[in-house]
Length: 97
Image (tube, rainbow, N blue to C red):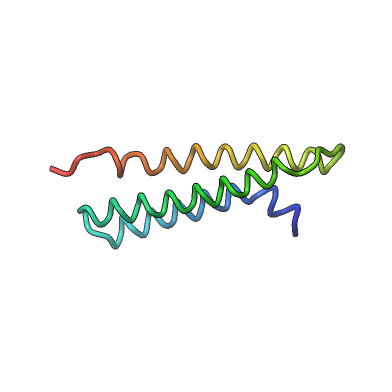
């Protein structure tokens, strides 16, 4: 189970953020409350991603499958952080008129 969490942890956080934003967009209003909800969700998920990334970076370097798994997990966590920021950007930048 640990290998699966290392490999897919960042991508699962990205998916969680995506579905959370979808729920806010579907059921939330187009006002300040929705923006605060998007910002709050984004910060919580980014903090979880950063904690996971820090934990993976503190692991001792390994060879073979374990080393590949750790590098792949780090790449997935970094990709997820970029994607999470990208997903939240329109909701936080577009002015409601």
